[in-house]
Image (cartoon, rainbow, N blue to C red; front, side):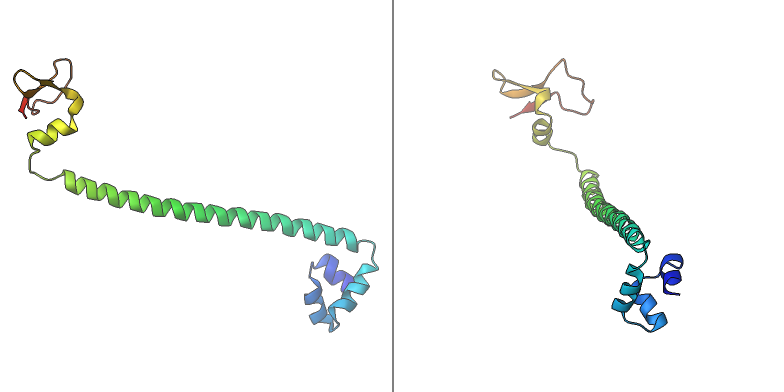
Length: 132
């Protein structure tokens, strides 16, 4: 009956000891007399190791997914905040435009002003001359 519970039903020693009302050590002694016991024990150990590896992989995957979701939430919040700030109706000052688009302007020392470069593509609402 013990062999059948262990090899066929795949119960562990604790479960078998509860069913047949014997101690775990007695069950182990009985099972160790079988030539199949060591192989079955090794197979179960390998199966548990594979199961543990799969559970660890799943745990790591869940942690990564959680971290990605948190980072995405932060980026979404920053993006939303930036879109709110940039969607204001107040026009940018000439100084702010020059500072933001500094590579599009050259400083003319004779006239003491910034002038839009000729070889740069720009929108029509950018000022062509900015007094400094």
